[in-house]
View 1 (cartoon, rainbow, N blue to C red):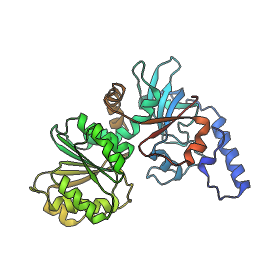
View 2: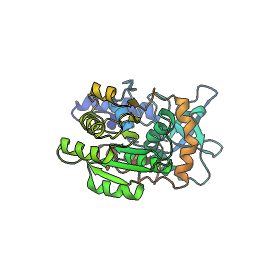
View 3: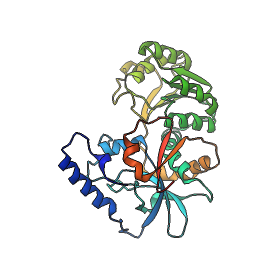
View 4: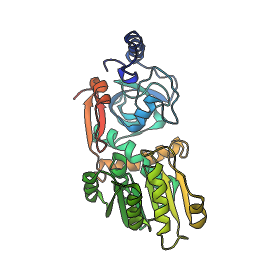
Length: 332
């Protein structure tokens, strides 16, 4: 990559910017070296620009250390010295995956099948992992259960719709604001779509009417839409003693949501999260092979948009399509 401007604001003094660029470049130009027996140097073939990467870089993610300079990137596809391709999750350090080479811990990686597309894997694994792990590690999912995906029009939401159907959900409901993307969900497995556009209370009412009987909610929104949806759905639920698991994964609509105390007392209703900490690193890694197989076999569709690594600054600041997943590659 040409310089480190993706990590600094354009309103800073130019002299300060120059010093930051030099510091960043000094880190980027230095080839990292393995320091333990489990570490190896890999050639990075593809690394995704996930929302998690952006929050890592701006310091807003709950795992951020604020350590600078920072090479962004949390996962990727790499080539080992013997030619084997692996999918890996990076260390929780400032040396990320937006580089030509990086050091990985083999215990945080899995081999990829022969002939797999590195860009496809790098684009799909992170957005798919959120709901895949939720279904496998946070609840006991039973085929035939009904699933609502809140925020289904983004990349992760689209994956959640597909994964729910792949795992045997009898009904998958996708909810979001963008009508064009909502309409496209039916081809991905959604049985019902609900628009959240317009006035919030009216949207919540529509959601309650359509999704009151679901067993599981995969929530990428949180905030006010979740507050209103919880009330609307529980009020219209025919049997409140039937279990409803609400899994909080993202917070696109706000970092906080007021959960009414009556909701927890008057219904068999649990709210739980899925992310780093609620699931161990070992738990995530254990799910990699099966998810990779689902992606490699074409059972899950992702819209990947590859760009040369040299254009990272330009792409980072450009408007993005949330239905696409940007992937940086060494060359195109």
